[in-house]
Image 1 (cartoon, rainbow, N blue to C red):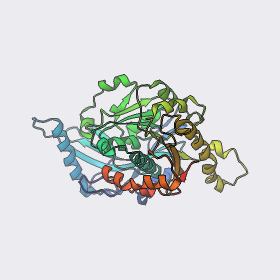
Image 2 (cartoon, rainbow, N blue to C red; image 1 turned 180 degrees about the vertical axis):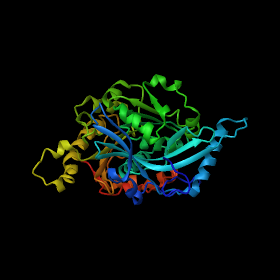
Image 3 (cartoon, rainbow, N blue to C red; image 1 turned 120 degrees about the vertical axis):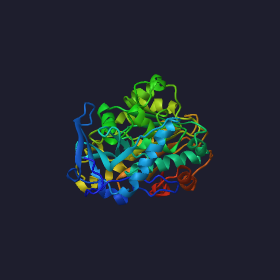
Image 4 (cartoon, rainbow, N blue to C red; image 1 turned 45 degrees about the horizontal axis):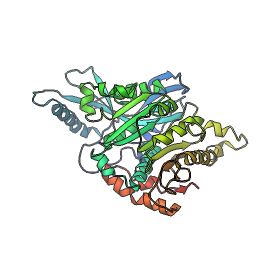
Length: 426
Protein backbone atom coordinates (compact mmCIF):
# COMPACT_ATOMS: atom_id res chain seq x y z
CA UNK A 1 0.00 0.00 0.00
CA UNK A 2 1.12 3.54 -0.76
CA UNK A 3 -1.03 5.73 1.56
CA UNK A 4 -1.66 9.42 0.94
CA UNK A 5 -2.54 12.25 3.28
CA UNK A 6 -4.13 11.59 6.64
CA UNK A 7 -2.61 8.17 7.29
CA UNK A 8 -0.05 7.60 9.99
CA UNK A 9 2.96 6.78 7.79
CA UNK A 10 6.32 8.39 7.07
CA UNK A 11 7.10 8.83 3.39
CA UNK A 12 9.46 11.17 1.51
CA UNK A 13 11.06 13.29 -1.38
CA UNK A 14 13.63 15.82 -2.43
CA UNK A 15 12.67 19.40 -3.12
CA UNK A 16 13.39 20.48 -6.69
CA UNK A 17 15.19 23.78 -6.31
CA UNK A 18 18.41 25.48 -7.30
CA UNK A 19 19.92 25.80 -3.83
CA UNK A 20 22.14 23.07 -2.43
CA UNK A 21 19.90 20.35 -1.02
CA UNK A 22 20.18 18.80 2.38
CA UNK A 23 21.52 15.26 2.31
CA UNK A 24 18.57 12.87 2.54
CA UNK A 25 21.00 9.97 2.73
CA UNK A 26 22.96 11.29 5.72
CA UNK A 27 23.84 8.74 8.39
CA UNK A 28 21.52 10.71 10.65
CA UNK A 29 18.66 8.88 8.90
CA UNK A 30 20.31 5.46 8.95
CA UNK A 31 17.95 4.25 11.67
CA UNK A 32 15.24 4.24 9.02
CA UNK A 33 16.97 1.74 6.72
CA UNK A 34 19.81 0.15 8.74
CA UNK A 35 17.37 -2.02 10.62
CA UNK A 36 16.53 -5.68 11.00
CA UNK A 37 14.18 -7.73 8.87
CA UNK A 38 11.38 -7.08 11.37
CA UNK A 39 11.65 -3.30 10.88
CA UNK A 40 10.49 -3.40 7.28
CA UNK A 41 8.38 -5.55 5.01
CA UNK A 42 9.60 -7.77 2.20
CA UNK A 43 8.62 -6.70 -1.31
CA UNK A 44 10.74 -9.23 -3.22
CA UNK A 45 12.33 -12.53 -2.27
CA UNK A 46 13.84 -15.22 -4.47
CA UNK A 47 16.79 -17.61 -4.65
CA UNK A 48 19.73 -16.76 -6.86
CA UNK A 49 21.28 -19.24 -9.28
CA UNK A 50 24.52 -17.22 -9.40
CA UNK A 51 25.86 -17.78 -5.88
CA UNK A 52 24.08 -14.95 -4.09
CA UNK A 53 21.80 -17.18 -2.03
CA UNK A 54 18.45 -15.70 -1.07
CA UNK A 55 18.04 -12.26 -2.64
CA UNK A 56 15.44 -10.03 -1.01
CA UNK A 57 14.36 -6.39 -1.02
CA UNK A 58 12.91 -4.86 2.14
CA UNK A 59 10.92 -1.64 2.28
CA UNK A 60 11.26 0.87 5.13
CA UNK A 61 9.34 4.05 5.87
CA UNK A 62 11.14 7.30 5.09
CA UNK A 63 10.68 10.53 7.01
CA UNK A 64 11.86 12.91 4.30
CA UNK A 65 10.77 14.88 2.51
CA UNK A 66 7.43 15.39 4.14
CA UNK A 67 4.14 15.42 2.30
CA UNK A 68 4.05 19.19 1.95
CA UNK A 69 6.59 18.94 -0.88
CA UNK A 70 4.82 16.27 -2.93
CA UNK A 71 2.69 18.70 -5.00
CA UNK A 72 5.87 20.48 -6.09
CA UNK A 73 7.24 17.25 -7.51
CA UNK A 74 3.90 16.36 -9.12
CA UNK A 75 4.07 19.68 -11.00
CA UNK A 76 7.65 18.93 -11.98
CA UNK A 77 6.61 15.60 -13.49
CA UNK A 78 3.82 17.33 -15.42
CA UNK A 79 6.24 19.97 -16.71
CA UNK A 80 8.68 17.30 -17.86
CA UNK A 81 5.90 15.53 -19.71
CA UNK A 82 4.90 18.77 -21.48
CA UNK A 83 8.51 19.43 -22.49
CA UNK A 84 8.70 16.02 -24.13
CA UNK A 85 5.47 16.59 -26.09
CA UNK A 86 5.62 20.22 -27.30
CA UNK A 87 2.74 21.67 -29.29
CA UNK A 88 0.17 19.35 -27.76
CA UNK A 89 -2.44 20.11 -25.19
CA UNK A 90 -2.25 17.72 -22.30
CA UNK A 91 -4.23 17.20 -19.18
CA UNK A 92 -1.75 14.66 -17.91
CA UNK A 93 -1.42 14.74 -14.16
CA UNK A 94 0.83 12.72 -11.90
CA UNK A 95 0.12 11.86 -8.28
CA UNK A 96 2.72 10.79 -5.74
CA UNK A 97 1.84 7.92 -3.45
CA UNK A 98 4.88 8.11 -1.20
CA UNK A 99 8.57 7.48 -0.63
CA UNK A 100 10.38 4.53 0.90
CA UNK A 101 13.84 3.22 1.54
CA UNK A 102 14.44 -0.06 -0.27
CA UNK A 103 17.33 -2.29 0.89
CA UNK A 104 18.74 -5.17 -1.13
CA UNK A 105 19.91 -8.08 1.04
CA UNK A 106 21.71 -11.34 0.39
CA UNK A 107 20.81 -14.31 2.62
CA UNK A 108 18.78 -12.08 4.96
CA UNK A 109 22.02 -10.68 6.36
CA UNK A 110 24.26 -8.66 4.05
CA UNK A 111 22.93 -5.21 3.19
CA UNK A 112 24.05 -5.11 -0.41
CA UNK A 113 22.68 -1.66 -1.21
CA UNK A 114 20.06 0.88 -0.21
CA UNK A 115 18.09 3.32 -2.33
CA UNK A 116 15.22 5.74 -1.85
CA UNK A 117 12.26 5.28 -4.20
CA UNK A 118 9.25 7.34 -5.12
CA UNK A 119 5.95 5.70 -6.07
CA UNK A 120 3.61 7.62 -8.38
CA UNK A 121 0.95 7.09 -11.01
CA UNK A 122 -0.57 8.90 -13.95
CA UNK A 123 -3.98 10.19 -12.86
CA UNK A 124 -5.72 8.92 -16.00
CA UNK A 125 -4.34 5.44 -15.27
CA UNK A 126 -4.61 5.07 -11.48
CA UNK A 127 -3.78 1.36 -11.56
CA UNK A 128 -0.44 1.94 -13.28
CA UNK A 129 1.97 2.59 -10.43
CA UNK A 130 5.61 3.21 -11.26
CA UNK A 131 8.70 3.41 -9.07
CA UNK A 132 11.44 5.98 -9.54
CA UNK A 133 14.72 5.61 -7.69
CA UNK A 134 15.84 8.96 -6.32
CA UNK A 135 19.11 9.40 -8.18
CA UNK A 136 20.33 12.31 -6.06
CA UNK A 137 20.23 10.32 -2.83
CA UNK A 138 23.17 8.14 -1.75
CA UNK A 139 22.64 6.47 1.60
CA UNK A 140 25.32 3.84 2.31
CA UNK A 141 28.55 5.61 3.39
CA UNK A 142 30.91 3.46 1.31
CA UNK A 143 29.16 4.56 -1.91
CA UNK A 144 29.70 8.21 -0.97
CA UNK A 145 33.31 7.33 -0.21
CA UNK A 146 33.79 5.75 -3.64
CA UNK A 147 32.29 8.78 -5.38
CA UNK A 148 34.32 11.24 -3.30
CA UNK A 149 37.74 9.62 -3.62
CA UNK A 150 37.22 8.62 -7.24
CA UNK A 151 36.10 11.94 -8.68
CA UNK A 152 38.46 14.08 -6.59
CA UNK A 153 41.41 11.91 -7.63
CA UNK A 154 40.41 12.14 -11.29
CA UNK A 155 40.03 15.91 -11.00
CA UNK A 156 43.48 16.08 -9.39
CA UNK A 157 44.93 14.63 -12.59
CA UNK A 158 43.90 17.78 -14.50
CA UNK A 159 40.87 15.97 -15.88
CA UNK A 160 38.29 18.60 -16.92
CA UNK A 161 35.40 17.46 -14.75
CA UNK A 162 33.43 20.64 -15.42
CA UNK A 163 33.24 19.93 -19.15
CA UNK A 164 32.10 16.37 -18.44
CA UNK A 165 29.41 17.55 -16.01
CA UNK A 166 28.12 20.05 -18.58
CA UNK A 167 28.14 17.43 -21.34
CA UNK A 168 30.88 19.13 -23.37
CA UNK A 169 33.05 16.01 -23.21
CA UNK A 170 32.41 12.32 -22.72
CA UNK A 171 33.42 10.63 -19.49
CA UNK A 172 33.54 6.88 -19.87
CA UNK A 173 32.69 5.03 -16.64
CA UNK A 174 32.60 1.31 -15.86
CA UNK A 175 30.77 -0.02 -12.78
CA UNK A 176 31.46 -3.65 -11.92
CA UNK A 177 28.73 -4.85 -9.58
CA UNK A 178 25.25 -3.34 -9.83
CA UNK A 179 23.29 -4.02 -6.64
CA UNK A 180 20.38 -1.61 -6.49
CA UNK A 181 22.03 0.68 -9.03
CA UNK A 182 22.37 3.79 -6.85
CA UNK A 183 26.00 4.50 -7.84
CA UNK A 184 25.64 4.46 -11.66
CA UNK A 185 22.31 6.27 -11.52
CA UNK A 186 23.80 8.97 -9.29
CA UNK A 187 26.73 9.46 -11.69
CA UNK A 188 24.47 9.54 -14.76
CA UNK A 189 22.21 12.16 -13.18
CA UNK A 190 25.09 14.38 -12.04
CA UNK A 191 27.42 14.13 -15.07
CA UNK A 192 25.75 14.93 -18.40
CA UNK A 193 28.73 13.67 -20.37
CA UNK A 194 28.95 10.37 -18.52
CA UNK A 195 28.48 7.20 -20.57
CA UNK A 196 28.23 4.38 -18.07
CA UNK A 197 28.57 0.63 -18.55
CA UNK A 198 27.33 -1.44 -15.61
CA UNK A 199 28.19 -5.13 -15.33
CA UNK A 200 26.19 -7.50 -13.11
CA UNK A 201 26.46 -11.29 -13.22
CA UNK A 202 23.17 -12.09 -11.49
CA UNK A 203 19.92 -11.59 -13.45
CA UNK A 204 17.98 -11.78 -10.18
CA UNK A 205 19.86 -8.76 -8.82
CA UNK A 206 19.09 -6.85 -12.02
CA UNK A 207 15.43 -7.83 -11.78
CA UNK A 208 15.27 -6.83 -8.10
CA UNK A 209 16.76 -3.40 -8.81
CA UNK A 210 14.19 -2.73 -11.54
CA UNK A 211 11.07 -4.28 -10.01
CA UNK A 212 11.58 -3.27 -6.39
CA UNK A 213 14.16 -0.45 -6.32
CA UNK A 214 13.05 1.79 -9.17
CA UNK A 215 16.10 1.40 -11.43
CA UNK A 216 15.20 2.25 -15.07
CA UNK A 217 14.35 -0.88 -17.05
CA UNK A 218 15.38 0.63 -20.39
CA UNK A 219 19.05 0.50 -19.35
CA UNK A 220 19.28 -3.30 -19.71
CA UNK A 221 21.04 -4.39 -22.91
CA UNK A 222 22.71 -7.62 -23.94
CA UNK A 223 25.44 -6.19 -26.18
CA UNK A 224 26.92 -2.81 -27.16
CA UNK A 225 25.33 -3.18 -30.59
CA UNK A 226 21.87 -2.82 -29.07
CA UNK A 227 22.48 0.64 -27.69
CA UNK A 228 20.94 2.55 -30.59
CA UNK A 229 17.83 0.34 -30.56
CA UNK A 230 16.62 1.17 -27.06
CA UNK A 231 13.73 3.56 -26.47
CA UNK A 232 12.12 4.13 -23.08
CA UNK A 233 8.37 4.17 -22.60
CA UNK A 234 6.45 7.38 -21.84
CA UNK A 235 6.82 7.24 -18.06
CA UNK A 236 10.53 6.53 -18.30
CA UNK A 237 10.91 9.42 -20.73
CA UNK A 238 9.39 11.74 -18.17
CA UNK A 239 11.55 10.44 -15.34
CA UNK A 240 14.87 9.81 -17.07
CA UNK A 241 15.10 12.32 -19.90
CA UNK A 242 18.68 12.38 -21.21
CA UNK A 243 19.85 9.38 -19.17
CA UNK A 244 18.49 6.58 -21.36
CA UNK A 245 21.17 7.22 -23.99
CA UNK A 246 24.04 7.09 -21.51
CA UNK A 247 23.37 4.22 -19.10
CA UNK A 248 23.87 0.57 -20.12
CA UNK A 249 23.39 -2.41 -17.82
CA UNK A 250 24.87 -5.73 -18.96
CA UNK A 251 24.13 -9.15 -17.51
CA UNK A 252 27.63 -10.57 -17.67
CA UNK A 253 30.51 -12.01 -15.71
CA UNK A 254 32.95 -9.15 -15.05
CA UNK A 255 35.95 -11.08 -16.33
CA UNK A 256 34.15 -12.06 -19.54
CA UNK A 257 32.98 -8.48 -20.12
CA UNK A 258 36.40 -6.91 -19.66
CA UNK A 259 38.13 -9.56 -21.77
CA UNK A 260 35.66 -9.22 -24.64
CA UNK A 261 34.88 -5.51 -24.60
CA UNK A 262 37.84 -4.14 -26.50
CA UNK A 263 36.25 -0.97 -27.85
CA UNK A 264 36.21 1.22 -24.74
CA UNK A 265 38.89 2.96 -22.73
CA UNK A 266 37.51 4.03 -19.35
CA UNK A 267 38.40 7.21 -17.47
CA UNK A 268 37.24 5.78 -14.15
CA UNK A 269 36.20 2.30 -12.99
CA UNK A 270 34.22 1.47 -9.85
CA UNK A 271 34.37 -2.09 -8.49
CA UNK A 272 31.98 -3.33 -5.80
CA UNK A 273 31.43 -7.03 -6.42
CA UNK A 274 30.63 -9.33 -3.50
CA UNK A 275 28.72 -12.60 -3.61
CA UNK A 276 26.08 -13.99 -1.26
CA UNK A 277 28.78 -15.15 1.17
CA UNK A 278 30.19 -11.61 1.27
CA UNK A 279 33.35 -12.66 -0.58
CA UNK A 280 35.23 -10.54 -3.10
CA UNK A 281 36.01 -13.16 -5.79
CA UNK A 282 39.71 -13.91 -6.06
CA UNK A 283 39.67 -13.65 -9.85
CA UNK A 284 38.83 -9.95 -9.47
CA UNK A 285 41.96 -9.19 -7.47
CA UNK A 286 44.55 -11.87 -8.21
CA UNK A 287 47.54 -10.26 -9.97
CA UNK A 288 47.77 -13.24 -12.34
CA UNK A 289 44.07 -13.23 -13.23
CA UNK A 290 42.96 -12.52 -16.80
CA UNK A 291 40.58 -9.92 -15.34
CA UNK A 292 43.27 -7.61 -13.96
CA UNK A 293 45.45 -8.06 -17.02
CA UNK A 294 42.56 -7.08 -19.29
CA UNK A 295 41.53 -4.21 -17.00
CA UNK A 296 45.03 -2.83 -17.45
CA UNK A 297 44.36 -2.27 -21.16
CA UNK A 298 40.86 -0.84 -20.60
CA UNK A 299 42.04 1.96 -18.27
CA UNK A 300 43.07 5.35 -19.65
CA UNK A 301 46.91 5.39 -19.75
CA UNK A 302 47.41 8.93 -18.44
CA UNK A 303 44.89 9.52 -15.67
CA UNK A 304 42.81 6.33 -15.47
CA UNK A 305 41.45 5.78 -11.96
CA UNK A 306 40.03 2.64 -10.32
CA UNK A 307 38.04 2.67 -7.07
CA UNK A 308 37.43 -0.61 -5.21
CA UNK A 309 35.16 -1.16 -2.23
CA UNK A 310 36.79 -3.54 0.25
CA UNK A 311 35.43 -5.09 3.41
CA UNK A 312 35.74 -8.28 5.49
CA UNK A 313 34.80 -11.60 3.88
CA UNK A 314 34.36 -15.18 5.00
CA UNK A 315 37.42 -16.41 3.11
CA UNK A 316 39.66 -14.31 5.35
CA UNK A 317 37.67 -14.92 8.51
CA UNK A 318 38.04 -18.68 8.19
CA UNK A 319 41.82 -18.40 7.85
CA UNK A 320 42.28 -17.57 11.53
CA UNK A 321 39.65 -19.31 13.68
CA UNK A 322 41.52 -18.54 16.92
CA UNK A 323 40.65 -14.84 16.67
CA UNK A 324 37.61 -13.89 18.76
CA UNK A 325 34.34 -13.12 17.02
CA UNK A 326 34.58 -9.42 17.95
CA UNK A 327 38.02 -8.95 16.44
CA UNK A 328 37.13 -11.04 13.41
CA UNK A 329 34.83 -8.18 12.47
CA UNK A 330 37.74 -5.72 12.51
CA UNK A 331 41.01 -7.51 11.77
CA UNK A 332 40.22 -8.94 8.32
CA UNK A 333 40.40 -5.45 6.85
CA UNK A 334 44.08 -5.12 7.69
CA UNK A 335 44.71 -8.74 6.71
CA UNK A 336 42.99 -8.61 3.34
CA UNK A 337 43.38 -5.07 2.01
CA UNK A 338 47.19 -5.14 1.53
CA UNK A 339 46.98 -8.19 -0.76
CA UNK A 340 44.37 -6.58 -2.98
CA UNK A 341 46.19 -3.24 -3.05
CA UNK A 342 49.46 -4.90 -4.00
CA UNK A 343 47.85 -6.84 -6.85
CA UNK A 344 46.13 -3.76 -8.30
CA UNK A 345 49.24 -1.64 -7.94
CA UNK A 346 51.52 -4.23 -9.55
CA UNK A 347 49.26 -4.71 -12.56
CA UNK A 348 47.73 -1.29 -13.16
CA UNK A 349 50.55 0.99 -12.01
CA UNK A 350 53.68 -1.14 -11.84
CA UNK A 351 56.84 0.97 -11.77
CA UNK A 352 55.02 3.93 -13.25
CA UNK A 353 55.53 3.13 -16.92
CA UNK A 354 54.40 -0.49 -17.42
CA UNK A 355 50.78 0.64 -17.79
CA UNK A 356 51.55 3.46 -20.16
CA UNK A 357 51.62 6.21 -17.55
CA UNK A 358 54.51 8.58 -16.90
CA UNK A 359 57.46 7.27 -14.94
CA UNK A 360 56.79 7.41 -11.22
CA UNK A 361 53.38 9.04 -11.59
CA UNK A 362 51.10 6.16 -10.58
CA UNK A 363 50.03 5.48 -7.01
CA UNK A 364 47.57 3.61 -4.80
CA UNK A 365 45.97 4.82 -1.57
CA UNK A 366 43.24 3.73 0.81
CA UNK A 367 40.83 5.55 3.09
CA UNK A 368 38.54 4.23 5.81
CA UNK A 369 34.81 4.75 5.41
CA UNK A 370 33.01 6.49 8.30
CA UNK A 371 30.44 4.54 10.33
CA UNK A 372 30.95 1.18 8.60
CA UNK A 373 33.81 -1.35 8.30
CA UNK A 374 34.74 -0.60 4.70
CA UNK A 375 37.85 0.67 2.98
CA UNK A 376 37.96 2.48 -0.36
CA UNK A 377 41.04 1.71 -2.43
CA UNK A 378 42.06 4.10 -5.21
CA UNK A 379 44.45 3.22 -8.02
CA UNK A 380 45.49 6.15 -10.20
CA UNK A 381 47.75 6.29 -13.23
CA UNK A 382 49.19 9.66 -12.28
CA UNK A 383 49.00 13.22 -11.01
CA UNK A 384 51.81 14.33 -13.32
CA UNK A 385 54.33 14.36 -10.47
CA UNK A 386 57.80 12.92 -10.80
CA UNK A 387 58.08 12.49 -7.04
CA UNK A 388 55.32 12.18 -4.51
CA UNK A 389 54.65 11.40 -0.87
CA UNK A 390 51.62 10.57 1.19
CA UNK A 391 51.16 14.24 2.09
CA UNK A 392 51.58 15.53 -1.47
CA UNK A 393 48.98 13.12 -2.84
CA UNK A 394 46.59 13.67 0.06
CA UNK A 395 46.90 17.44 -0.33
CA UNK A 396 46.38 17.24 -4.10
CA UNK A 397 43.23 15.17 -3.72
CA UNK A 398 41.80 17.06 -0.74
CA UNK A 399 42.42 20.41 -2.44
CA UNK A 400 40.04 19.34 -5.21
CA UNK A 401 37.27 18.22 -2.87
CA UNK A 402 35.41 21.52 -2.56
CA UNK A 403 35.67 22.12 -6.30
CA UNK A 404 34.16 18.70 -7.01
CA UNK A 405 31.38 19.29 -4.47
CA UNK A 406 30.46 22.57 -6.16
CA UNK A 407 30.69 21.33 -9.73
CA UNK A 408 28.41 18.37 -9.02
CA UNK A 409 26.25 20.19 -6.43
CA UNK A 410 26.80 17.33 -4.02
CA UNK A 411 24.63 17.18 -0.89
CA UNK A 412 27.53 15.76 1.14
CA UNK A 413 31.12 16.76 1.91
CA UNK A 414 33.79 14.94 -0.10
CA UNK A 415 36.60 15.69 2.32
CA UNK A 416 34.76 13.83 5.07
CA UNK A 417 35.23 10.66 3.02
CA UNK A 418 38.83 11.40 1.92
CA UNK A 419 40.76 12.41 5.03
CA UNK A 420 40.01 9.43 7.29
CA UNK A 421 43.07 7.14 7.65
CA UNK A 422 44.50 8.26 4.29
CA UNK A 423 47.22 5.67 3.61
CA UNK A 424 49.60 5.57 0.67
CA UNK A 425 50.35 2.02 -0.47
CA UNK A 426 54.10 1.49 -0.88
